[in-house]
Length: 260
Length: 169
Picture 1 (tube, one colour):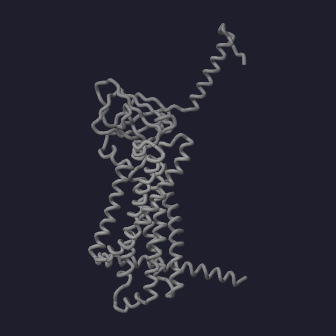
Picture 2: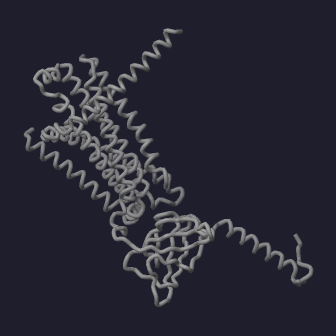
Picture 3: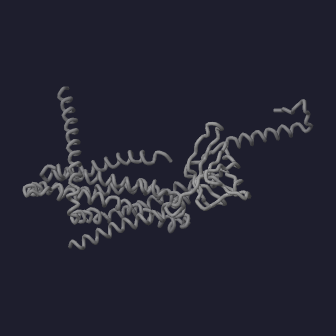
């Protein structure tokens, strides 16, 4: 009995310790941002590795989500004779929620795992220790450019997801189903607010970018220097990022969209 | 890949993001509409504002000329006090009337401003005196039932005696 309580207490303390460790890691990253910005070429290279390389999956998913959303919403709306507002429903769903969240989940899966694996293998191959021996701060040289790259890439990817989704919905709604094209665009123009909906969506995707990139970097940095350790850290990145993004999405939605 | 190649690709990526934002802003949001220039305020009092919300449009002849800025309850007269922002440069005569109308059958409510015939126009901060409140469905149904009952009563008693009102149930 006491052994179980002891184990529970130990687990909780270990969890709190790791939480504090993660917080200090985050503050360290922020502190090294000016140093990293001086070597801007590194940041650009990371935006390419994280952003450009994710374009294919983001655009393909956006198109698919746009198609499916238009079809399903049409079946639901046509029952109430409200099929003309299909454009508005798809636009708001994408720009407010699905764009930031689905992009963040895909980002965690594609860019997050690649970051964790890269940093983890660097740690396993003792490259980070070698850098420290040469008096190069691995955080400023390796970690922060990836952090900034993720923060820059994520809102752009979310916007592209939403845009491609709306275009996909246009193809299905106007070309396949036969809704009037003028109605499709004008009901969006009158119903979507640039600051409240699009602006809040961009804020959300920026927050999710910070979360996903930070979790990926932390898991990579703290991994055990073995192949199993790297594999474990990679899966943990996806799970922790996804849960954090979904939890944060609920909080942000409640904050931003509480009053109609 | 060469450094120049990487920089070009990243530049294209960021440009794509900016284009997506511009597309959404122009084609799929209300950026290109009224709201850029400041307007002047007008006030109006209604007995019942119904479902009117802040930022509802103010239309004249169907064209959006302003937005509802704030809705408050006047504690002295217990009427709803609505403040509207009207586009600068549009003047309305002093006897214009404001009605609360519904767009479509079940749509959002808006304020319809009908121009009157006075020579003088509203000054900023004036109050619209001719107002018509929103239609409340329950009152309408109550009125309808009352009229129906009154018609049924009148039909059952063809000779209206002032001392003996027909009250066959």
